[in-house]
Image 1 (cartoon, rainbow, N blue to C red):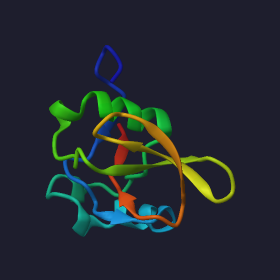
Image 2 (tube, rainbow, N blue to C red):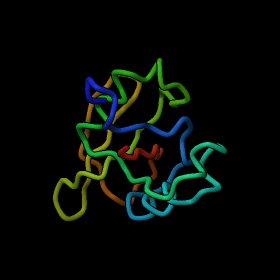
Image 3 (cartoon, rainbow, N blue to C red):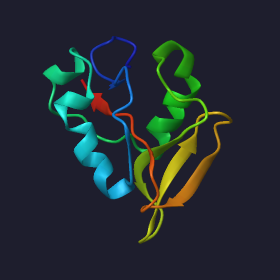
Length: 109
């Protein structure tokens, strides 16, 4: 969030489930996968690798993350891989897009 509070990125308050990378975007845009406040918006997206890392460092204040889980980012890492993050240790990894990981949406305001 900018220091004046006018612009930034917010993280959904709950996971949108688990999916492979190809299906993750559909999950973040499904209103039924959000809480009642999140369902009011239709501009959710996967976080970038850097945004996901910021969410990791704020995981206690955001809440609801599966700390033993792997989460997808939108940042690709070659044709068959994309970046994700392990929320137990904070390590980022280049995983095969076909594996199932957790999905948590972000949106700009």
